[in-house]
Amino acid sequence: MTSELRDLAVTAAQAAGQLIRDGRHKSLEVAFTKSSEVDIVTEMDLAAESLLIERILEQRPDDGILGEEGGLRPGTSGLTWVLDPIDGTVNYLYGVGPYAVSVAVVEGEPHPQLWSALAGCVYQPGTGDGQDGVTYDACRGQGAQRNGRPVAGPTDVGLRHALVGTGFGYLEARRRRQAAVIAALLPELRDIRRLGSAALDLCLVADGRLDGYFERGLNPWDHAAGALIAQEAGARVSGPGEGAPTVEMTIAAGPRLHRELSLRLRELDAFAD
Ligand code: LIP
Image (cartoon, rainbow, N blue to C red; front, top):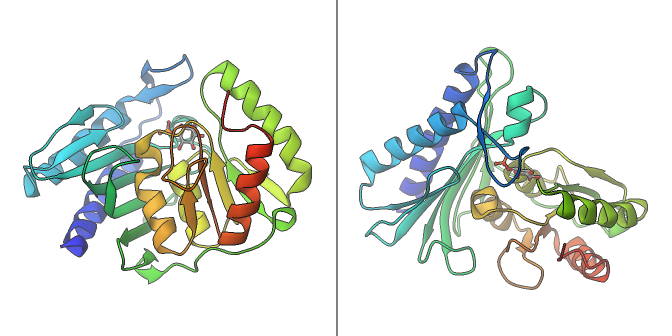
């Protein structure tokens, strides 16, 4: 069953990814903002989420939906699809940096602390004409793939040699705090990368292309699929402590770096604004 769920996540994510790539017109504008004037939603976010919901419910009408733009639509099947139609919306609006469609299906309460992820897909549309893009996917207990081949798995370096992804929130007070944490941490790492898509950051950890990733303030749809993909690849993915990612913090890395990075972030009081 989980492989059928994974296949639906992949086909829906790829369809939405092709829509946002091919449907992006030059005069793309902000449709509205959310938590701040720079937390944006475009008309393509809305169109992509509608397409995802249509494709999913036409096959699985009793499932619930938790979408970044439309919120929670409870179902009766016990499964909920957690959707980020464009993860990396600012990158998409500016045409700079990566963006992806993130689709996960979870069992249980639609809350990261309570759900069990069953399958997921993160699809990064191709940038050149005719390119197929990059598809990351996973089923619980069956490993993680990149374009149908097993991902490389996480590295396991120490903090000093780690290339670490991170991201920043949309509210001024949180950004000031995040900047202070980065200022303290940067000299202690190989380097930092701020790519702009949590879903892809988590997939890059799964594929050994980032040694680690951390970010405070993620929403469930940002990490739902990427966390499963990273975990199925063998990475540790947690919140501030041992449990699932929370809004306080998401940390993903191989075992050694996860331990060292979690400890250092706690020392820097990175789990609070
Ligand atoms: C984005 C995250 C990213 C974070 C951005 C933004 P969105 O999600 O994927 O990691 O740093 O601020 O929240 O808003 O593009 O779906």
